[in-house]
Length: 244
Image 1 (cartoon, rainbow, N blue to C red):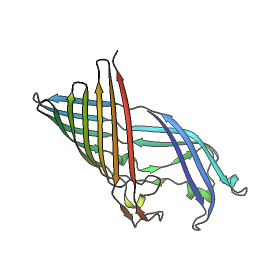
Image 2 (image 1 turned 135 degrees about the horizontal axis):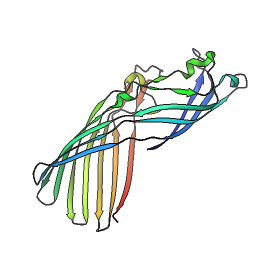
Image 3 (image 1 turned 180 degrees about the horizontal axis):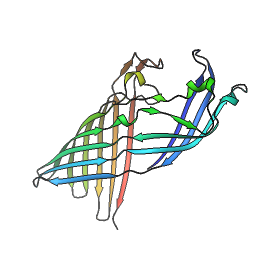
Image 4 (image 1 turned 90 degrees about the vertical axis):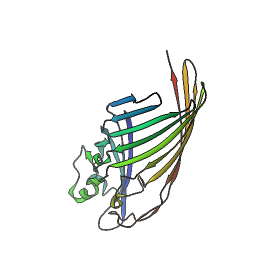
């Protein structure tokens, strides 16, 4: 898995709410995980499935750049920086049934171990001056594990065309005290639709997702980022398979 990270934030001299500069971290990494899956045909029309995707610990390596006054600049740890972020493991199980020759209905339960994301901490090559060390302390995340639910249907129009639709309830892993605009992630209601075109040598898959988030009011944020959060997102994807 290749991943690229860009992280920006303002620098303040606490306890004064006065911005004295800006920090910019740009880093990337390549790390590895594994997937395991099992599909069992209970009957000719009912299938059971389970899959597991491992956690992936990404070790970012990059550079930190700061914009600040000439007096503050010598205190800042400009240069090399590393960050560790562990992406969560995912365990999913589902059941699918075929109705007649055209319809397939599926129901899934998905567990996501977001508790692997407990803090965000940057380790700089240069020593951080004690006068500004509080600005670079680990950022608490303390995400919690969640269980999601989804249901979907597929309709086989003909041997070459399949139509699909589905719904997913995606629960937020973010505690209220750590909610912020960097990744405003409340509960989400996701509606999807798509189609697959199947040929002897290739398949083409198209999909669209409408992501509706639950309006969230934050009152107990540790950084004072209280307020009302609203969001909507559209996702479009396409994949192509070719068999040699």
